[in-house]
Length: 124
Image 1 (cartoon, helix red, strand yellow):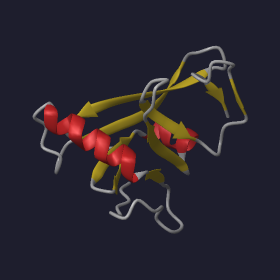
Image 2 (image 1 turned 90 degrees about the horizontal axis):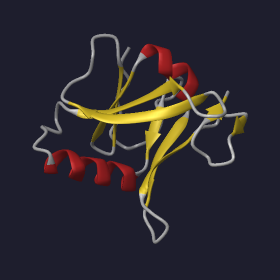
Image 3 (image 1 turned 180 degrees about the vertical axis):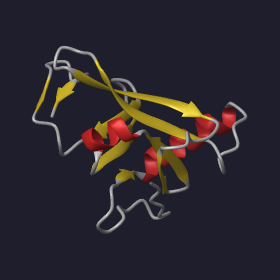
Image 4 (image 1 turned 135 degrees about the vertical axis):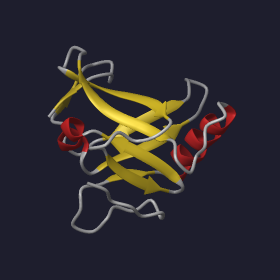
């Protein structure tokens, strides 16, 4: 399944993940600094077992999507989501926050019903 839009907005009626402009810019800069082709490469966003609430997010750069990935293009960034993870993160927004307390990517997920105290894991 593939859903593509370059404006960062969700596809109407489709499975979606939104990426803020700040997150896209930061990810693209990091990928370019690693010599990755940003026209083909992307950021893999996935959910894994772990953390005190049961699930946690994972992210890594990959040179190309896997065969059954959901592929989204938002603000110029390609995002790869496997079939097992998409149900947990559908409708989520990937954002990037910088600041004195530390910088990093953050997932705002409307499917979360509870999070652990440290904010590193969640339950849907």
